[in-house]
Length: 493
Image (cartoon, rainbow, N blue to C red; front, top):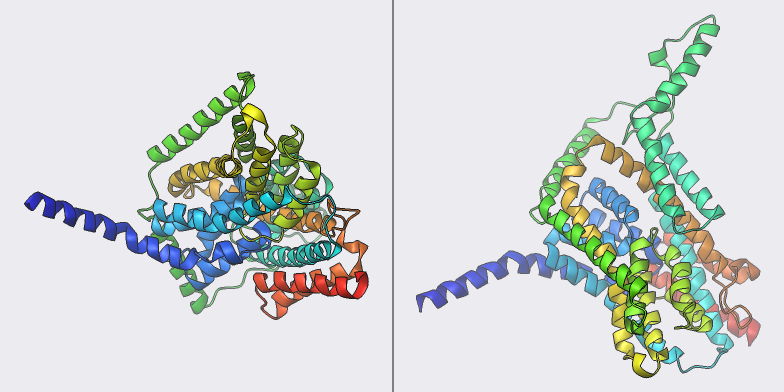
């Protein structure tokens, strides 16, 4: 009798330890999967507004660090960021619950779309194309606004200005799987060179030579050589003394950051090492089986391709599209038309763009014949597990090391540059989405919004509405769809 009472009391105590944080996390995240339109760039702004500005779950410093980590690791960037924020706030159970609430609405929508697409005719009605173009145009405006606002937070000195600009410019010029990670690493190297005085040492040699040549010399220490420490002011002039209020605000943020870093929800490095080791072991096993198993079922082949894609994709949604086309369309599991139609619609769906894998996995199952056939729901589940698992496992493992790593000046310096370069790549996403936003019967795979001035107006309306009038992304998306229907009624009809 007494043992059962003790057992019940222990069970209640265990529930009280994680249930309140879990319920609190669900309370403040359940709606994100229904309202977070616009893809990763907009998601970053939504997460910052809610969890940093409104709820103060994490400080701006921790947010920027987690943003840089989410960009540095493979997989869906905004999903990893939200997952890590939830883990920091409420633990692993809260993180997993948040992930499911985040991806399930869009995933179910994409699964339903796959069932419908497999039965529709080759050409869609013109009104549908107009609706899709309006939704895409509004999405571009939202992403552009997110890029501008994130850039304002990421630029702290000349070095980060350079990283934002160079990352965006270089991303426009070339696209490859290895290219985006290289750009982010290059950004980290730039800030390391600045913070550790390499650029200052080089420029000081030049300044010393000029000072000797001038009649009125200037001491080397007084010359501004364009360095800038991490977190320095973004002004080019001398740094002004901070006021008492600014000093108190900075000290309070540093205190809160220190408290949140010591959160009991962050595991130790041993568990992090075990999680990371498990991921690499599973990845090697799947890739070996993929290479040597000649008679592998289609279901396993689809899973292996998604698992590989989820492991080697950096940069989030805009990068996943060409890779999935190669891994899913080329083997003949999904037709090119169905792929492009899903691509146009996923832009207007809430939640992560990686839900595109649910759509493709379901279509792959529907196309399988004979002994290789498997249910469409199983295909959707295979797509989701394959594409999301690598990024979440690696994020959880690195989060366990983060407490120790972030204390090192070198790591902080690298993340500052990676963060700035990743923001620059968001401007690249704006351009690429703009170039495929207009869809019609002749360009079902997407064409530039600039072909029709009305879609540029839709994009501008979305941007200005969010920037000046506080229109939320879901409302902007709906407004874009309505403007698309208006265009159809005036021009096409």
